[in-house]
Length: 161
Image 1 (cartoon, helix red, strand yellow):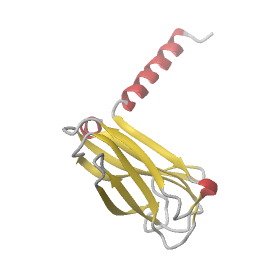
Image 2 (cartoon, rainbow, N blue to C red; image 1 turned 135 degrees about the vertical axis):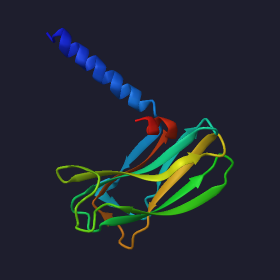
Image 3 (cartoon, helix red, strand yellow; image 1 turned 120 degrees about the vertical axis):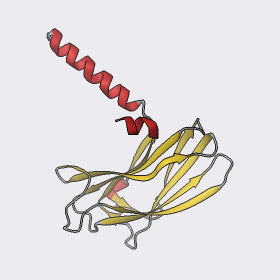
Image 4 (cartoon, rainbow, N blue to C red; image 1 turned 30 degrees about the vertical axis):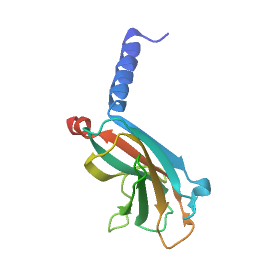
């Protein structure tokens, strides 16, 4: 039977984790089949943005294996607003430094990167936004990319951390 101290410590840990999640409005990561991202495999994510007065930080999440053959990845990020207007951004995400050391958080041969795309972003309309992530590298399919996703968090909450 767990001691009172163990149960208390567990409860505090749960509260801390829950409070961190309240800052996150949206986060979804999609597994890339066979760790080979084909250019035709467009990752489509939908997020409900309720508050046009709120500022948000938008991140791109990428998980790669250590065998990824490049130090960077180019992506297209297509955004469709609730009224149907579209925009397209081209992003370069650095996954390794100049010395070839992987960036991000690593565990074994897997590296997680959360890269800031937009800081203090204002969404002009409330409603459902559609985000599409496409790999834009010359090699197709792109090997050793495991997961790709997006995270949107309240900017004021992120600054408080």
